[in-house]
Length: 154
Image 1 (cartoon, rainbow, N blue to C red):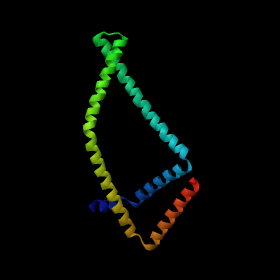
Image 2: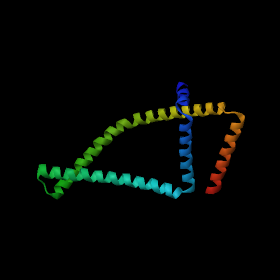
Image 3: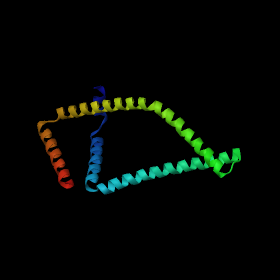
Image 4: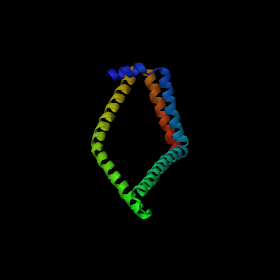
């Protein structure tokens, strides 16, 4: 409970307003221009995949030159050696990741549950501190917003 009270004290009104405005703008953009938002998301994902591919090619070319220089092999032998070298590196990496995955899963699950409980307690505290008029306003605005979203999308 100490974290919730600290969180209430740390968040100023202007910070909360700016954060709410940011979320509202994101939701409005998603509802009004879903093709643009998803197009931007997939373009960014494509950019990340292209960068990963360039990094992979950079590593492969450098390994080709290194193996060709050290072992003095022809192109086909170099490609075979580099392929099995990269395959071995990938398997070693997967072996270490396999050991980390259960720990990361349990840690992520605990963090997610803690964040959910904190958010639930924060929302409950916020709701309890509202006056009756503000509770009615919040319910009316939420209902009207959901109605508008359903009306626009369907």
